[in-house]
Length: 229
Image (cartoon, rainbow, N blue to C red; front, side, top):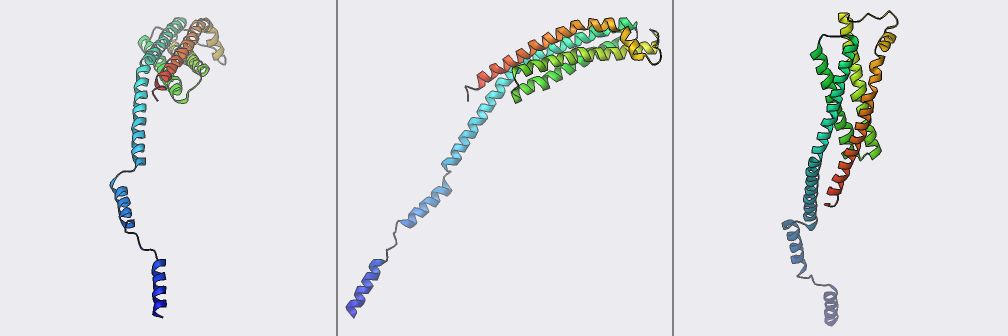
């Protein structure tokens, strides 16, 4: 019986695997490594973030450099719109025979088209081109439409309203009959409206040239920034 007990005890002892002394130190080492040192994933994320920040910074620097000729071109286009406003005001003042408030009308007809043309080109063409990637045809169309609206339609409307109001106030021309006010003013200004064909053609051509210029600058900016990525 003693022999059987010894044998069964020996079998039980042999069946149970002894705990390895190396397991606890390995767990301690892993926990120490995880808590004491940053993981490779975090290091890669930091490196990628730094690279993205550098690329974005280079893009912004390149865009700022390329925006300088664009601003010069916008200023030139806005100046032509202001000159058209001065020419339109001069034409309508002679037609209505107005000699009062010359400085006020000339100042408004020069500054309003100038500012509206600059703002419209900056928001509708430049910003849209660098953010939404509009096509070349759309860029040219927008630039031409801004020239027509801000350079011709706006200047004619302002000159007609301001000088017509002054003509009515100071009675420099005979008042229109009742019920035919619009027809009377149209017949009175038909010569000046025909003359506005010249600035209309000029602003359309200027808009086409400006749109092509903006798109060319945009393409050159993309060629400079894409290889750096």
